[in-house]
Image 1: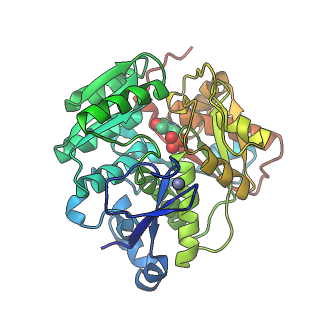
Image 2: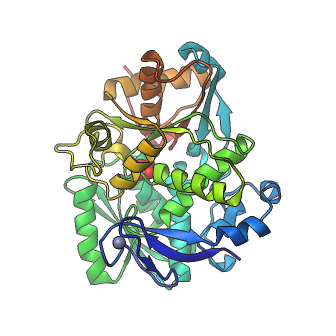
Amino acid sequence: MNYLTHLQCSHCGRTHSAEQLIRLCPDCGYPLLAQYDLEKAAAEIDRDELARRPATMWRFRELLPVRDSRYIVTLGEGGTPVLKLNRLGEKLGLKHLYLKDEGQNPTGSFKALGLAAAVSRALELGAHAFVIPTAGNAGGALAAYAARAGAEAHVYMPKDAPLINITEVQMTGADLHLVNGLINDAGREAARDAEAGGWFDVSTLKEPYRVEGKKIMGYELAMAFGWELPDVIIYPTGGGTGLIGMWKAFAEMERLGWIGKQRPRMVAAQSAGCAPIVKAFHEGWEEAKPWPNATTLAGGLRVPVAIGSRLMLRALRESGGTAVAVLDSHILDAQQLLASHEGIFVSLEAAATVAALQELTTSGWIQPDERVLIFNTGSGLKYRLLLT
Ligand SMILES: *Cc1c(COP(=O)(O)O)cnc(C)c1O
Ligand SMILES: [Zn+2]
Protein backbone atom coordinates (compact mmCIF):
# COMPACT_ATOMS: atom_id res chain seq x y z
CA MET A 1 0.00 0.00 0.00
CA ASN A 2 2.97 2.38 0.20
CA TYR A 3 6.18 3.22 -1.67
CA LEU A 4 8.68 2.96 1.19
CA THR A 5 11.91 1.36 -0.09
CA HIS A 6 14.67 1.79 2.52
CA LEU A 7 16.29 4.09 5.07
CA GLN A 8 19.20 6.35 4.31
CA CYS A 9 21.53 8.01 6.78
CA SER A 10 21.25 11.79 6.60
CA HIS A 11 24.96 12.12 7.39
CA CYS A 12 27.09 9.28 5.96
CA GLY A 13 24.60 8.33 3.25
CA ARG A 14 24.71 4.57 3.94
CA THR A 15 21.45 2.71 3.39
CA HIS A 16 19.63 0.33 5.72
CA SER A 17 16.61 -1.93 5.54
CA ALA A 18 13.33 -0.34 6.57
CA GLU A 19 11.92 -3.74 7.64
CA GLN A 20 13.54 -3.68 11.08
CA LEU A 21 13.08 -1.71 14.29
CA ILE A 22 16.01 0.66 14.04
CA ARG A 23 16.89 4.01 15.57
CA LEU A 24 20.00 5.99 14.57
CA CYS A 25 22.50 5.12 11.83
CA PRO A 26 24.54 2.19 13.20
CA ASP A 27 27.62 3.52 11.40
CA CYS A 28 27.74 7.18 12.42
CA GLY A 29 24.95 7.80 14.96
CA TYR A 30 23.06 10.43 12.95
CA PRO A 31 19.35 10.32 11.96
CA LEU A 32 18.04 7.91 9.33
CA LEU A 33 15.48 9.17 6.84
CA ALA A 34 12.84 7.11 5.03
CA GLN A 35 13.13 6.84 1.25
CA TYR A 36 10.31 6.05 -1.17
CA ASP A 37 10.08 4.97 -4.80
CA LEU A 38 8.88 8.39 -5.92
CA GLU A 39 9.15 7.63 -9.65
CA LYS A 40 6.67 4.78 -9.27
CA ALA A 41 4.52 6.89 -6.95
CA ALA A 42 4.54 9.75 -9.46
CA ALA A 43 3.19 7.43 -12.13
CA GLU A 44 0.53 5.85 -9.92
CA ILE A 45 -0.75 8.51 -7.50
CA ASP A 46 -3.14 11.24 -8.52
CA ARG A 47 -2.76 14.16 -6.12
CA ASP A 48 -6.31 15.31 -6.85
CA GLU A 49 -7.62 11.91 -5.78
CA LEU A 50 -5.76 12.31 -2.45
CA ALA A 51 -7.37 15.71 -2.02
CA ARG A 52 -10.81 14.04 -2.13
CA ARG A 53 -10.01 11.53 0.63
CA PRO A 54 -11.00 12.18 4.28
CA ALA A 55 -8.92 15.04 5.64
CA THR A 56 -6.49 13.26 7.95
CA MET A 57 -2.76 12.80 7.56
CA TRP A 58 -3.41 9.25 6.30
CA ARG A 59 -4.80 10.61 3.03
CA PHE A 60 -1.08 10.61 2.16
CA ARG A 61 -0.65 7.01 3.37
CA GLU A 62 1.27 5.89 0.26
CA LEU A 63 4.00 8.34 1.30
CA LEU A 64 3.99 7.28 4.94
CA PRO A 65 5.90 4.30 6.37
CA VAL A 66 3.09 1.93 7.46
CA ARG A 67 2.75 -0.90 4.94
CA ASP A 68 -0.42 -2.59 6.18
CA SER A 69 -3.22 -0.17 7.06
CA ARG A 70 -4.42 -2.48 9.86
CA TYR A 71 -1.48 -1.20 11.90
CA ILE A 72 -2.50 2.45 11.63
CA VAL A 73 -3.27 3.92 15.05
CA THR A 74 -5.27 7.09 14.48
CA LEU A 75 -7.14 9.68 16.48
CA GLY A 76 -7.97 11.67 13.34
CA GLU A 77 -4.71 13.64 13.22
CA GLY A 78 -3.88 15.96 10.32
CA GLY A 79 -6.13 17.83 7.93
CA THR A 80 -5.81 21.01 9.96
CA PRO A 81 -6.73 24.31 8.30
CA VAL A 82 -4.62 27.08 6.79
CA LEU A 83 -6.29 30.29 7.96
CA LYS A 84 -5.78 33.72 6.37
CA LEU A 85 -4.96 36.35 9.00
CA ASN A 86 -6.39 39.57 7.61
CA ARG A 87 -6.56 41.63 10.78
CA LEU A 88 -3.11 40.70 12.06
CA GLY A 89 -1.74 41.05 8.53
CA GLU A 90 -3.10 44.56 8.29
CA LYS A 91 -1.61 45.44 11.66
CA LEU A 92 1.83 44.21 10.52
CA GLY A 93 1.54 45.62 6.99
CA LEU A 94 1.26 42.22 5.28
CA LYS A 95 -1.28 41.48 2.56
CA HIS A 96 -0.97 37.70 2.56
CA LEU A 97 -0.45 36.33 6.04
CA TYR A 98 -1.56 32.77 6.90
CA LEU A 99 -1.47 30.42 9.86
CA LYS A 100 -1.60 26.64 9.73
CA ASP A 101 -3.39 25.58 12.88
CA GLU A 102 -1.82 22.36 14.14
CA GLY A 103 -3.29 23.14 17.55
CA GLN A 104 -6.48 21.47 16.30
CA ASN A 105 -4.80 18.06 16.32
CA PRO A 106 -5.62 15.28 18.82
CA THR A 107 -3.83 16.00 22.13
CA GLY A 108 -3.76 19.68 21.14
CA SER A 109 -0.41 19.74 19.40
CA PHE A 110 1.31 18.68 16.20
CA LYS A 111 3.24 16.07 18.17
CA ALA A 112 0.24 13.88 17.29
CA LEU A 113 1.37 13.67 13.66
CA GLY A 114 4.82 12.34 14.46
CA LEU A 115 3.72 9.92 17.13
CA ALA A 116 0.84 8.51 15.10
CA ALA A 117 3.36 7.63 12.39
CA ALA A 118 6.11 6.37 14.70
CA VAL A 119 3.85 4.28 16.94
CA SER A 120 1.98 2.74 14.01
CA ARG A 121 5.14 1.75 12.14
CA ALA A 122 6.91 0.47 15.26
CA LEU A 123 3.90 -1.71 16.12
CA GLU A 124 3.99 -3.08 12.57
CA LEU A 125 7.66 -3.95 13.11
CA GLY A 126 6.95 -5.73 16.41
CA ALA A 127 7.36 -3.12 19.18
CA HIS A 128 4.90 -3.27 22.06
CA ALA A 129 6.39 -0.91 24.67
CA PHE A 130 7.49 2.66 24.07
CA VAL A 131 9.56 5.24 25.91
CA ILE A 132 9.95 8.96 25.27
CA PRO A 133 11.79 11.90 26.80
CA THR A 134 9.71 15.04 26.33
CA ALA A 135 9.27 18.69 27.23
CA GLY A 136 5.57 17.83 27.60
CA ASN A 137 3.47 17.62 24.43
CA ALA A 138 5.26 14.67 22.85
CA GLY A 139 4.72 12.71 26.06
CA GLY A 140 1.02 13.48 25.97
CA ALA A 141 0.83 12.35 22.37
CA LEU A 142 2.78 9.13 22.92
CA ALA A 143 0.62 8.29 25.93
CA ALA A 144 -2.54 8.80 23.86
CA TYR A 145 -1.45 6.73 20.85
CA ALA A 146 -0.05 3.96 23.02
CA ALA A 147 -3.32 3.80 24.97
CA ARG A 148 -5.25 3.73 21.71
CA ALA A 149 -3.14 0.77 20.57
CA GLY A 150 -3.19 -1.04 23.91
CA ALA A 151 0.61 -0.67 24.13
CA GLU A 152 2.81 0.32 27.06
CA ALA A 153 4.14 3.91 27.32
CA HIS A 154 6.91 5.24 29.57
CA VAL A 155 7.19 9.03 29.63
CA TYR A 156 10.13 11.04 31.03
CA MET A 157 9.54 14.76 31.43
CA PRO A 158 11.06 17.63 33.39
CA LYS A 159 9.29 17.96 36.71
CA ASP A 160 8.50 21.60 35.91
CA ALA A 161 6.63 20.59 32.72
CA PRO A 162 3.13 22.10 32.31
CA LEU A 163 0.57 20.54 34.64
CA ILE A 164 -1.69 19.69 31.72
CA ASN A 165 1.04 17.51 30.17
CA ILE A 166 1.50 15.65 33.44
CA THR A 167 -2.28 15.20 33.72
CA GLU A 168 -2.81 13.99 30.16
CA VAL A 169 -0.12 11.34 30.59
CA GLN A 170 -1.47 10.20 33.97
CA MET A 171 -4.99 10.05 32.56
CA THR A 172 -3.98 7.30 30.11
CA GLY A 173 -2.35 5.23 32.83
CA ALA A 174 1.09 5.57 31.22
CA ASP A 175 4.19 5.20 33.39
CA LEU A 176 5.31 8.79 34.14
CA HIS A 177 8.78 9.77 35.39
CA LEU A 178 9.30 13.38 36.48
CA VAL A 179 12.95 14.24 36.03
CA ASN A 180 15.22 16.87 37.57
CA GLY A 181 16.52 18.90 34.66
CA LEU A 182 15.62 19.43 30.99
CA ILE A 183 14.59 17.27 28.05
CA ASN A 184 18.18 16.11 27.47
CA ASP A 185 18.41 14.94 31.10
CA ALA A 186 15.08 13.15 30.63
CA GLY A 187 16.61 11.62 27.49
CA ARG A 188 19.51 10.19 29.43
CA GLU A 189 17.26 8.54 32.02
CA ALA A 190 14.87 7.28 29.36
CA ALA A 191 17.72 5.72 27.34
CA ARG A 192 19.07 3.94 30.43
CA ASP A 193 15.68 2.44 31.36
CA ALA A 194 14.79 1.63 27.74
CA GLU A 195 17.82 -0.60 27.53
CA ALA A 196 16.87 -2.46 30.69
CA GLY A 197 13.15 -2.68 29.89
CA GLY A 198 13.37 -3.51 26.17
CA TRP A 199 11.23 -0.46 25.32
CA PHE A 200 11.38 1.21 21.92
CA ASP A 201 12.69 4.78 22.29
CA VAL A 202 10.85 7.31 20.12
CA SER A 203 12.99 10.37 21.00
CA THR A 204 12.97 13.19 18.43
CA LEU A 205 14.83 12.09 15.26
CA LYS A 206 16.36 9.10 17.04
CA GLU A 207 14.02 6.83 15.11
CA PRO A 208 13.11 7.44 11.47
CA TYR A 209 9.34 7.90 11.48
CA ARG A 210 8.21 10.77 13.70
CA VAL A 211 9.64 13.09 11.06
CA GLU A 212 7.53 11.26 8.45
CA GLY A 213 4.36 12.24 10.29
CA LYS A 214 5.59 15.80 10.64
CA LYS A 215 6.43 16.06 6.95
CA ILE A 216 2.72 15.79 6.23
CA MET A 217 2.44 19.45 7.29
CA GLY A 218 4.45 20.21 4.13
CA TYR A 219 2.11 18.13 1.93
CA GLU A 220 -0.96 19.66 3.51
CA LEU A 221 0.19 23.23 3.14
CA ALA A 222 1.08 22.66 -0.52
CA MET A 223 -2.41 21.25 -1.07
CA ALA A 224 -3.98 24.21 0.76
CA PHE A 225 -2.06 26.68 -1.43
CA GLY A 226 -3.10 24.91 -4.66
CA TRP A 227 0.25 23.09 -5.02
CA GLU A 228 2.31 26.23 -4.73
CA LEU A 229 4.32 27.13 -1.70
CA PRO A 230 4.28 30.40 0.23
CA ASP A 231 7.29 32.75 0.09
CA VAL A 232 8.21 32.49 3.76
CA ILE A 233 7.49 29.88 6.47
CA ILE A 234 8.20 30.68 10.12
CA TYR A 235 8.46 27.65 12.40
CA PRO A 236 8.98 27.49 16.19
CA THR A 237 12.05 25.33 16.46
CA GLY A 238 12.99 22.92 19.23
CA GLY A 239 14.15 19.49 18.07
CA GLY A 240 13.38 20.57 14.51
CA THR A 241 11.27 17.67 13.22
CA GLY A 242 8.75 20.00 11.61
CA LEU A 243 11.37 22.04 9.81
CA ILE A 244 13.25 18.96 8.63
CA GLY A 245 10.04 17.13 7.75
CA MET A 246 8.62 19.96 5.66
CA TRP A 247 11.91 20.41 3.81
CA LYS A 248 11.89 16.68 3.02
CA ALA A 249 8.25 16.89 1.90
CA PHE A 250 9.06 19.70 -0.54
CA ALA A 251 11.86 17.63 -2.13
CA GLU A 252 9.56 14.61 -2.38
CA MET A 253 6.74 16.62 -3.92
CA GLU A 254 9.08 18.06 -6.55
CA ARG A 255 10.15 14.52 -7.51
CA LEU A 256 6.49 13.52 -7.62
CA GLY A 257 5.89 16.38 -10.05
CA TRP A 258 3.37 17.96 -7.67
CA ILE A 259 5.25 21.23 -7.16
CA GLY A 260 8.01 23.11 -8.98
CA LYS A 261 11.43 24.27 -7.87
CA GLN A 262 10.27 27.29 -5.88
CA ARG A 263 10.81 26.95 -2.13
CA PRO A 264 9.79 29.12 0.80
CA ARG A 265 12.51 30.88 2.77
CA MET A 266 12.45 28.83 5.97
CA VAL A 267 12.76 30.69 9.25
CA ALA A 268 13.50 29.11 12.63
CA ALA A 269 12.04 31.03 15.57
CA GLN A 270 13.54 30.32 19.00
CA SER A 271 13.44 31.91 22.43
CA ALA A 272 16.42 34.08 23.35
CA GLY A 273 16.68 31.91 26.47
CA CYS A 274 17.47 28.82 24.37
CA ALA A 275 18.57 29.62 20.84
CA PRO A 276 21.22 27.09 19.75
CA ILE A 277 20.03 27.00 16.14
CA VAL A 278 19.90 30.80 15.83
CA LYS A 279 23.44 31.03 17.21
CA ALA A 280 24.79 28.31 14.92
CA PHE A 281 23.04 29.82 11.89
CA HIS A 282 24.53 33.28 12.40
CA GLU A 283 27.98 31.94 13.33
CA GLY A 284 28.06 29.88 10.13
CA TRP A 285 28.42 26.59 12.01
CA GLU A 286 27.32 23.28 10.44
CA GLU A 287 26.17 21.89 13.75
CA ALA A 288 24.74 23.61 16.83
CA LYS A 289 26.55 23.58 20.17
CA PRO A 290 24.74 22.75 23.43
CA TRP A 291 23.04 25.83 24.89
CA PRO A 292 24.02 26.40 28.54
CA ASN A 293 21.34 27.17 31.19
CA ALA A 294 18.39 26.96 28.81
CA THR A 295 15.41 28.87 30.17
CA THR A 296 12.18 29.84 28.43
CA LEU A 297 8.48 29.72 29.21
CA ALA A 298 8.01 28.06 25.81
CA GLY A 299 8.75 24.49 26.95
CA GLY A 300 8.80 22.97 23.46
CA LEU A 301 11.63 25.36 22.54
CA ARG A 302 13.66 24.47 25.62
CA VAL A 303 15.84 22.01 23.70
CA PRO A 304 19.51 22.78 24.40
CA VAL A 305 20.89 20.04 22.12
CA ALA A 306 19.20 18.74 18.96
CA ILE A 307 20.55 15.77 17.04
CA GLY A 308 18.96 17.15 13.87
CA SER A 309 20.75 20.50 14.01
CA ARG A 310 22.78 19.85 10.84
CA LEU A 311 19.63 19.07 8.90
CA MET A 312 17.86 22.17 10.23
CA LEU A 313 20.79 24.44 9.41
CA ARG A 314 21.03 22.96 5.94
CA ALA A 315 17.33 23.61 5.27
CA LEU A 316 17.54 27.19 6.55
CA ARG A 317 20.59 27.93 4.37
CA GLU A 318 19.48 26.12 1.20
CA SER A 319 16.18 27.96 1.35
CA GLY A 320 17.74 31.41 1.78
CA GLY A 321 16.03 31.60 5.15
CA THR A 322 17.14 32.83 8.53
CA ALA A 323 16.84 32.22 12.27
CA VAL A 324 15.47 34.63 14.85
CA ALA A 325 15.64 34.65 18.66
CA VAL A 326 12.89 36.52 20.52
CA LEU A 327 12.55 37.45 24.18
CA ASP A 328 9.96 35.61 26.29
CA SER A 329 8.33 38.96 27.14
CA HIS A 330 7.84 39.54 23.41
CA ILE A 331 6.45 36.00 23.02
CA LEU A 332 3.83 36.70 25.69
CA ASP A 333 2.80 39.97 24.01
CA ALA A 334 2.66 38.27 20.62
CA GLN A 335 0.41 35.52 21.98
CA GLN A 336 -2.13 38.14 23.06
CA LEU A 337 -1.72 40.12 19.84
CA LEU A 338 -2.70 37.08 17.77
CA ALA A 339 -5.60 36.14 20.05
CA SER A 340 -6.99 39.68 20.13
CA HIS A 341 -6.75 40.16 16.35
CA GLU A 342 -7.77 36.72 15.12
CA GLY A 343 -9.34 34.78 17.99
CA ILE A 344 -6.63 32.14 17.81
CA PHE A 345 -5.15 31.22 21.18
CA VAL A 346 -1.81 29.64 20.36
CA SER A 347 0.90 28.00 22.43
CA LEU A 348 3.86 30.10 23.58
CA GLU A 349 6.08 28.21 21.14
CA ALA A 350 3.85 29.28 18.28
CA ALA A 351 3.64 32.84 19.59
CA ALA A 352 7.40 32.98 19.01
CA THR A 353 6.65 32.86 15.28
CA VAL A 354 4.48 35.96 15.60
CA ALA A 355 7.23 37.75 17.53
CA ALA A 356 9.80 36.71 14.90
CA LEU A 357 7.42 37.86 12.17
CA GLN A 358 7.20 41.30 13.76
CA GLU A 359 10.99 41.57 13.79
CA LEU A 360 11.33 40.43 10.18
CA THR A 361 8.69 42.83 8.86
CA THR A 362 10.18 45.74 10.81
CA SER A 363 13.65 45.01 9.43
CA GLY A 364 12.33 44.65 5.87
CA TRP A 365 13.47 41.02 5.55
CA ILE A 366 9.81 40.25 4.78
CA GLN A 367 8.13 42.48 2.18
CA PRO A 368 4.46 43.59 2.38
CA ASP A 369 3.23 41.58 -0.61
CA GLU A 370 4.96 38.29 0.24
CA ARG A 371 2.92 35.24 1.20
CA VAL A 372 3.92 34.36 4.74
CA LEU A 373 2.87 31.25 6.66
CA ILE A 374 3.32 30.91 10.40
CA PHE A 375 2.69 27.72 12.35
CA ASN A 376 0.57 27.20 15.38
CA THR A 377 2.13 24.01 16.69
CA GLY A 378 -0.04 23.67 19.79
CA SER A 379 -3.20 24.99 21.36
CA GLY A 380 -2.88 27.76 23.93
CA LEU A 381 -5.54 25.90 25.90
CA LYS A 382 -2.83 23.47 27.04
CA TYR A 383 -1.08 26.20 29.04
CA ARG A 384 -1.94 27.95 32.23
CA LEU A 385 -0.79 31.53 32.32
CA LEU A 386 -1.73 34.48 34.43
CA LEU A 387 -2.37 37.61 32.44
CA THR A 388 -1.21 40.83 34.03
C1 LIG B 1 7.62 20.20 20.43
C2 LIG B 1 7.02 21.51 20.14
C3 LIG B 1 7.67 22.45 19.31
C4 LIG B 1 9.03 22.20 18.70
O1 LIG B 1 8.90 21.28 17.66
P1 LIG B 1 10.14 20.56 16.98
O2 LIG B 1 9.60 19.87 15.82
O3 LIG B 1 10.72 19.66 18.01
O4 LIG B 1 11.11 21.63 16.60
C5 LIG B 1 7.00 23.62 19.01
N1 LIG B 1 5.78 23.89 19.53
C6 LIG B 1 5.14 23.03 20.35
C7 LIG B 1 3.80 23.41 20.88
C8 LIG B 1 5.73 21.81 20.68
O5 LIG B 1 5.09 20.95 21.48
ZN1 LIG C 1 25.42 7.28 9.04
